[in-house]
Image (tube, rainbow, N blue to C red; front, top):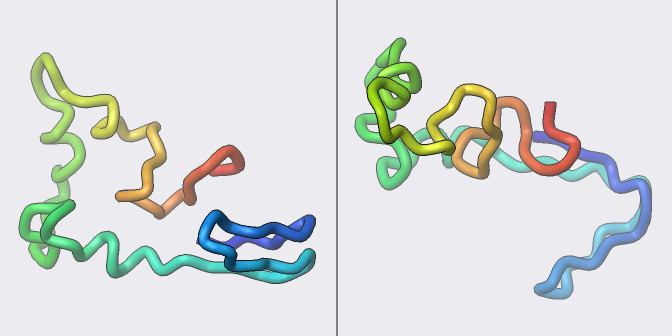
Length: 80
């Protein structure tokens, strides 16, 4: 996930990002986290479809919902 700061920004921890700075976050460590995904190194083509099967599936499992746990399309108010 990449972003370009369009104005100066300071995070709550004091980290300062000047206007024009390019910022990126790594998706791979999140996508390979066993706390988030069961067997993350195993190819499961229906991993997300299976999570949506049946009544009572969580909103977080819907294919059109962005989250900090699935960063392929980014996350936040400008996510695609």
